Image 1 (cartoon, each protein chain N blue to C red):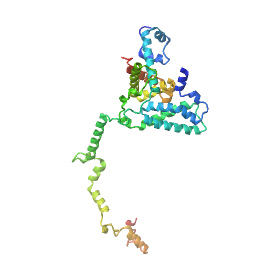
Image 2: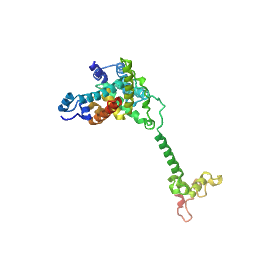
Image 3: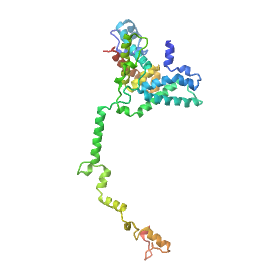
Image 4: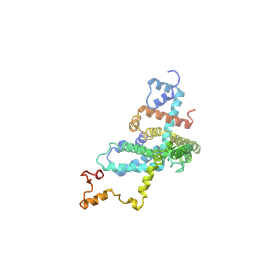
Length: 186
Length: 156
């Protein structure tokens, strides 16, 4: 089960190495790419646009004779770069403030929990998401790639063009912020 | 090992690093073990929430609010532009170069307006204009030659 989750997190990289039809690739990776774009951009609409852009690139690449060793890793790289470009073009990010405090706790239901646990969990979830959006862009990228996508520290460093030390520092700061939000750090 | 592990050391241990002594301490110290547990739990929980949770479209949608400092910055920039554009009254040196040049050269403006708004008679070719010489040349004359056999410099 743990292995399956890890494979899912890593974007089925090994599975995608086998020849696959475009439809299969689309079905396998679409949700993951969209989630990653949402995490990196913090805006569902922008993320949807970028996801479409990435999937279009997937189609273009799929039509060429040269396919990457791992479609999952390739797609992640393309998505991260596309999000970088999108963020650069979003000058309004500088101008407009993100209303991160308005995330509604009800948007984060927790299945398989008693009403009491659910209430606590919802509160925590809302806080964690708000904290995530308050992290620096680099911290968000590093955390999403390392812990949500399941990339190794070295892989994250290579993808983002930074040192492994920087990756660890960003992760450490993000972790500190999450612990503070959960009340584990006082 | 004396004393509990530092926060950073605990984090490095969670990343699979750290020395054997530090790992041994972690295994033996309930306080460090609890801190380590908090640390790993926070990242795991955050990752799970981000993975599962429907990250809503920006909650306020497109109703983002302008930051107060950005309004102040825009007003200040506007004020500076207005001052630069208008310049300080009576001090043309403070005005933009192009504007100062225009206003400090009334002769140029006069000539420009003469060219643009000249009456019909004024826009007709002057006697020494190229048209006269061209006409003469077409009729077989040599208007460019002076009486003394020289060359009229106006034809060059």
